[in-house]
Image 1: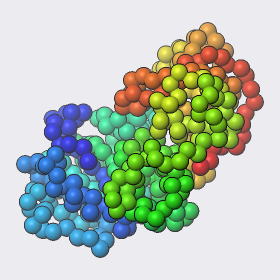
Image 2 (image 1 turned 45 degrees about the horizontal axis):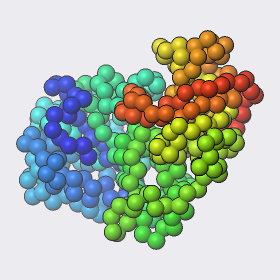
Image 3 (image 1 turned 45 degrees about the vertical axis):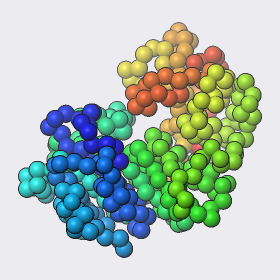
Image 4 (image 1 turned 180 degrees about the vertical axis):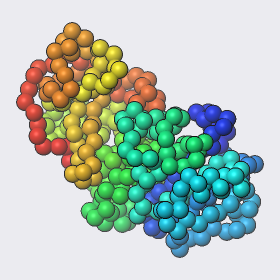
Length: 347
C-alpha cells in the first residue's frame, strides 16, 4: 500500500480509504497484516479496519493495538451506509480506513450508481470530487487486488464478472501462490488481468518471492523487431496490452490497425482516441481500449465518434492525466476510412 506521509493528493479534511479485495483465502488478511507492520505504513492516528470477510487467517489483537487499529466486522453489504460509517468516524476519529472487501460482494456498490468516464478517471487518479456511498470526507485512495494463482483458472472461468469489478479500479494486482504454474499460463493470466485492470501494476509471486516478468516467454503474433507493425484485427488486444505493459519496446515504431474513432468532449481539436470495444469479463461489461492519438485537426474534422478508419501512427510517450503519469501517446501519420469490425476484442 502507499506510504502514509502527507497523502499528497488529498485535502486536509479528507480521509484516505484503502480497499483490499480478492476472493476468500486469496491472502488478503496476510497482505494487510504484513503491510501494517512495515515502517513506511506506520501512523500515530487511528486506523479503522472494516473486515467484510473472515477467512482462516485472523488478526492478533496485540498487533492491532500496536498499530493503533480498530477492527470492525461487517457481516453484510447493507451495513455499509453513510450513516453507519459516519458514526464510526465520529467515534474513532480515524486517520485512515482499510477495507478488507468480500470478493463475492459487488464492489461497485461502494459508489453511488454508474460513474461517468470523467468521474471514473478521477477515482483512478485518486482525485477528490467523485461521490461514493461513504461519508463525504472519505476518499478511495488505493484499490489493491489479491489473487490466488493456484485457483485463478476457476475464477476466470466461472466468476469473471466479479474479477472485473475488483480489477477495474485497482492500482496494484498481486497474484500469489504461482508455484508450479507454467510460464505460458502466467503470460495468459497477465494478459487477462491487464485487460480487466488497465491501470494496475501486476505482480506475480511464488514461494521465493516476485517472479521477474521479463523472464516470461514472448507470445506476440507479430514481429516486435519490425519498424512497422501491421496488426490483424484479432491481434489488436494483444498489442494494446503489451504496449501498456512494455511501452518502451514500441517507442518510435509505426503501427497500423483498424479502429473506431472516439472524440471525447472537451478534448483538443488535434486529439482523438482510436480503439476497439473489448469484452474483458462478459457481454454486459464492455470496455473501450484505445490510446490518445494526436493528428491534423483539419483531417480529424472529417471524422466523428463511431466512424471507423485504418490508423497508421507512430508510438511515443507523454505525461497524461489518463495514466496518472507517463504513458503511450500516438502520432497519427494517416487515416483511411474503413468498414466496421463487429466482433469485440476478447481475451
